[in-house]
Each structure stands twice: as C-alpha cells, then as structure tokens.
Image 1 (cartoon, one colour):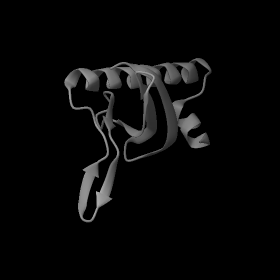
Image 2: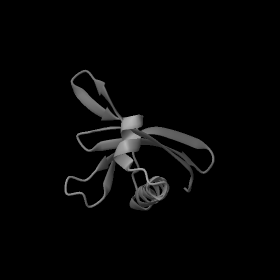
Image 3: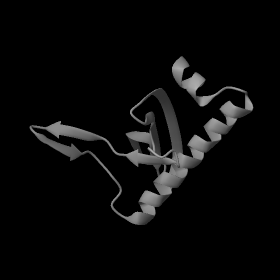
Image 4: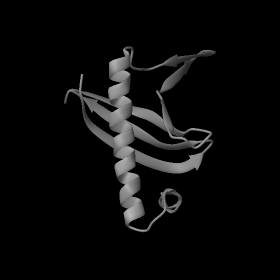
Length: 102
C-alpha cells in the first residue's frame, strides 16, 4: 500500500497533541483522525490512531498491522509535517503563533 495523500490540521497544543492527520491509501481508502503528538523529550513526533469507547473498553477503529505500512504512514505524515513547519519558519512565523491562530 502507498500513501497517496496527506492532510494535516493543526490544533491548539494540548498535552503534546499538536495536530490531526488524514491520509489516503492507494488513492482508494481515506483514513482520518490520526493524532500527531510531540514526544515528551522534544526529539520528534509520534502517532496515535483513533479509538472509540464501547462500554468500559477502548477499541481502536483502525491501525496498521504490518511494520512496512506503519513506517510508510509515519514517513508520509512526518514529511508533510516537516514541509508545513518549514514553510511557516520560512515565512517568519512560529509554529506556536500559527497554532494559536487556529
């Protein structure tokens, strides 16, 4: 499977959560609600996939099962995030200023 599209929606940062991503796989499957968190030590980012509470249990709605797909999704999202942040920096706007605006 190939990640053919990535969109990122920034939010006001909260407990490390900075944005949500949506992706399209093979131009056929749209997945949204993938949370982007800044790692606590500031060394990068991590993804979490959407869940739904059913009774007292949290159930994942979807997530990659195989490592190559997981790596492809992470790479595509993190590359898009890097591009967006670089454009903000190039425009002399900080990520925090942009996030507060949203």
